Structure formats: structure tokens, C-alpha cells
Amino acid sequence: MDKLVETEFVASDYGKNWVKILVVKKDTEKHEIRELEVCTALTLNNHRDYMLEDNSDVIATDSQKNTVHILAKQFGIKNIETFALLLSSHFLRKYQQVNGEKHNHAFQFIQDCTRVCEVTQKRNGGPLVKAGIRDLRVLKTTQSAFKNFVDDEYRTLPFVDDRIFSTIVTADWWYNTSTGFCFDKAWEEMKKCILEEFAGPATTGKFSASVQNTLYGAVKTALARIPQIEKVDVTLPNKHYFMLISQDFLN
Image (cartoon, rainbow, N blue to C red; front, top):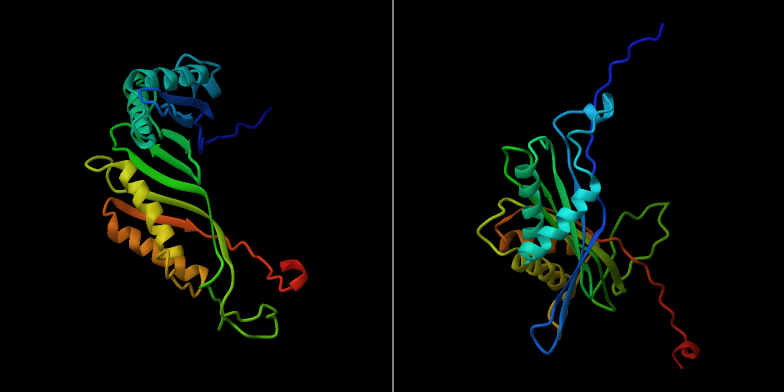
């Protein structure tokens, strides 16, 4: 006799990944394009599809993909956060069986980094908007030091007063509201805070005592300038470069 095992669903969302949208504006002599990749994930209020072989409540991932395309054509895309909010409200309004968490991810590829956002919303709850930056690669050749750290028998890294500081910025931040402000301006301001803290003024630069200190300065400035931001998560992995001091190399 088989033993009855009680099961619990920890997560059961499903959806469509990397739905491509290319927005082309030709109303001026200089054309503009905006490329996005959208992911959807829906959680139903039951598990009949898993347990009873009943797919009657399942919104096919192909239908989710078509929804992304149709809503983009009907309403346009002002920015990725607004479009993600539109998708979130549509799925909850259209399908009563969508009851748990809902995620929409949209990625806008631009020249120097990738703009990302995620909207999470539960039925009868307000949307939670997270925005972010990916692959923002920066480097400065001076005004960066790292010294006076723990000096014990395991240390091999020398103290340096001047070094190359290079990193690839990954940043996420959560808004405390989804209305009453411009997502585009907030995103640009966050990026500006990071670059200002890293580089400083063009003629004088800004000294960095450590990666940690630069990260803290950027987050502190962003929270002061953008009151709609509740929480920030920034990663600055140190990309090391070895200094080559050789006349043969320089010549």
C-alpha cells in the first residue's frame, strides 16, 4: 500500500520569457528605436492543473505573449515601468483566477547599460515597482586608493594610493509609490547619482577611498534626491587591472 504524502506548493508561477518588442518612431527625419524584452509570470488561485490534470484556468504562455504585443500596440510604451504596470493590472482584471503574485520584467537596451524593471502585484493589493540598471561599465584611471586594511600574515595585496578603479554596476531600487512621479526622470537621476559619485566633476574628478565608500555615497545621494525610492541594492564588483610600467610597451 502506497503511503500518502502531503505536499505543499511553495511557488507555482508560470509565464512567457523574453517577448521581444521593437518600437520604431519615424515621425521625424531622425528615426528612433526602442527595444524591449518582456517576461510575464502568473500565479493562479488553485493548483488543478498540477493535481487534477485540469487546464481550464490556465492562461497559455502563448496567450500571454500575444497580450504583450497587443497592449503594446494599443497603448504604446511610454516607459518600461508604466508598461509593466499596464500588464499587471490587465492580467488581474481580465482573469479572476490570477490571484497570487504577478511579475512583469521589461528590459530596455540602450547604448551604455540596460534598464530593467519588475512589477509585483497581488489581487486586492497595490503594485510594487522595482527598477534597475545592468551592465553599466565604468573605469577611471586615477583618484582611487585602497590602503590601511587588515595587515596580517595572510595579506599579499599592497597598499595603494593611486590605482585604476573599474567596475560593472548592477543596481536595483524599490519605489514606495507607483504614481505621482516620472519613472524616466527617476531612473536617469539614479544613474546620474552613481556616475557622479564614481567620476565626480569632469575637470577635477572625485577621490574614492574604497569601492564600499563609493557605493555608499551613491546610495546616500540617490535616497536624498529621489524621495520615491524606499530601498536600494547596488553591486560594484572590482575589475582588477595590473599596471604595466614598461618603456617598450609605451613605445
